[in-house]
Image (cartoon, rainbow, N blue to C red; front, side, top):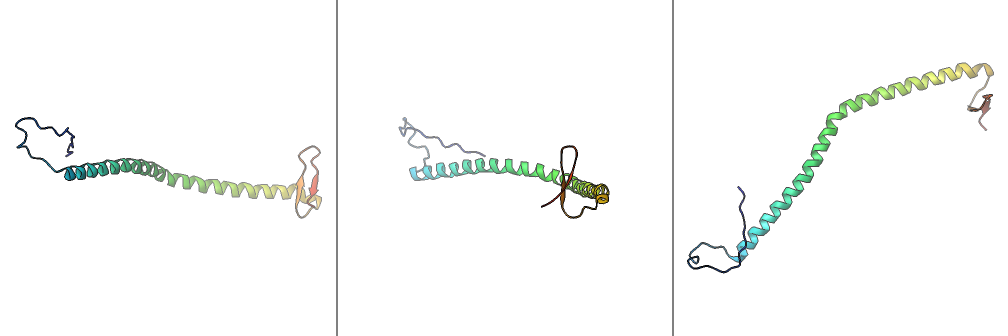
Length: 113
């Protein structure tokens, strides 16, 4: 239930002097409390938006983690295949240690300095 705090100009019409009234201090207290509620509701909206986004990411986390595992496995498998093929191609030249292969033809094998 929302209560409305309304400000009047303080002038009483005839017959209104018997109406219930709150003191000015009580009125200010109510206005301040209402402002606090409004500010908290604004903060709640910001936090709720963050929570909703975080929940969306959390729901995608398991799938992303599984995909990451598959990618890591593929990297390992392809790196090992590259190393094995590199060894097959270069081993007949009796090259050991670090080297590079030039990217222009002819593709010379260049030992690291």
